[in-house]
Image (cartoon, rainbow, N blue to C red; front, side):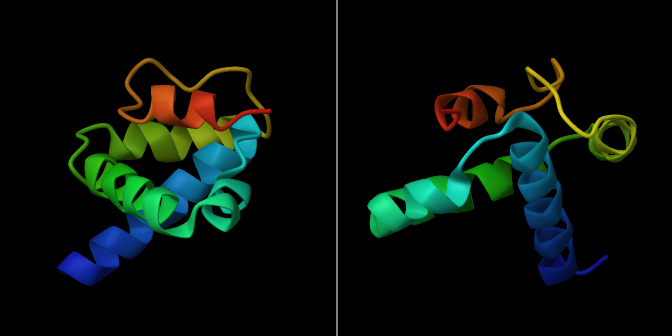
Length: 84
C-alpha cells in the first residue's frame, strides 16, 4: 500500500474512532485551525504507525458507539480530550 493510501486509510480509521467516541475533531479544528490541524496530523501519523490496524477495523465494525477507545489505541487520550 502506498504512503498516501495508508494515510487516507488511517485518517478514515481516526475519523471512525472519533465518531464512535463522540470526539469533536472538526469542532476543535474550527476553534484553533493551526494547532488542531497539527494535532490531527500527528494523530493520523501515530495511527498509521500502529500495529493493531485490523483489530481497529474489527472493533469499529463491532461498535457504533463506545465510552472509551480500545486499550491499543495510540490516540485514546487525545480523542478522550475532544469529548464534550
